[in-house]
Length: 468
Image (cartoon, rainbow, N blue to C red; front, side, top):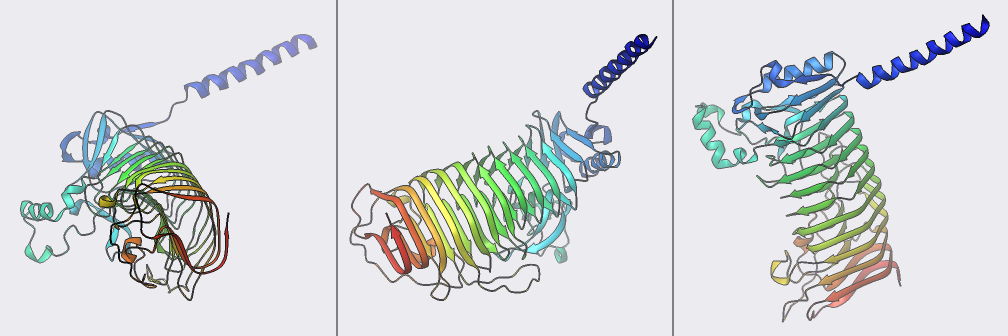
């Protein structure tokens, strides 16, 4: 009897396990197709309300996937909610409306160029466990926000003359996440924003994996901006932008930290890997590795603290650069701009910066932003020196200088916008460093394709230098 009971119990136990496994295997992610909420993928209908209804329903029922499929869907601002994944299928496209009145602002601010920001195509605020996935396209329709097209739009919608001032000047970001957490972007293709493609502000626990960004439709077309955010991984991405490709910044006193960027392909008409210029909060525990930078006009690696940020424990390792202006630029400045009504910071600092295993070829003499170009520029100010920089195993190939080059004194520009081209031609073709406490160089070489009349290296006001 006891043996029979045990056999029956074991059978019940096994049956329970099988039932659980079958339940889990059959359990599917809840889907909310936007067509079921009235969306029409005809490339004409503005579907903002329908898509938002799908998102709201998904979140209210505990989460799932809001599915965009089989069509081209025009929309204004949509806001992601808790536990919602927006899935853009490969055969579909989400396109931003050409009418600025279809967009909303979340947490507006003024950036370092003096422009009001905050509008977005897809946004979130105080949301958690959200994602955008799929192999479809999100297109910001950024050309619609060019001045000539905004003029046509005002005529089309018969906008009264007293409402035309400032129309469309708050150009929308493509994606904007504010004070949100547990965010995933995967596989999606981001295209042609009116401003930045992807902005994370005061957000955390972020994974960006295998996305593609092409952003050349307007001005200030950044790729990914990490702003006062932390616990972030960016990997396997292909980013091609008019402005900065990957930009680490802080438009609030809160830091950006615990960041890993790896295995990415980057191209920019300005800067590929950039810290700043907005730099109120600190930057620390950041590692960038195994990336390829190509055809970049405004700088390969740019580390800038000018608004009070303490930048430290930053490692940049194994970066290949081809046809890139100014491969390495490090600047500690005294601009001290403020954002969001925050109090002005004290001058920041730059310490424990490690840049190693870099192989770079600069742009030709005629295509360089500064002719004659240099490979590395590191500068603090007379009253605020950079604390510590290590450069190791770095090889940079340069074109040489113009004939009859006349060198001028390099200005300090302590409070100016921090851009290497504003300093014009430097006194060294390889490395020019000044106002530094500790500078260590190991296996740093510069190769010339033709004659350069300048010295290879010039160091001014460097307290401790260790060159191997």
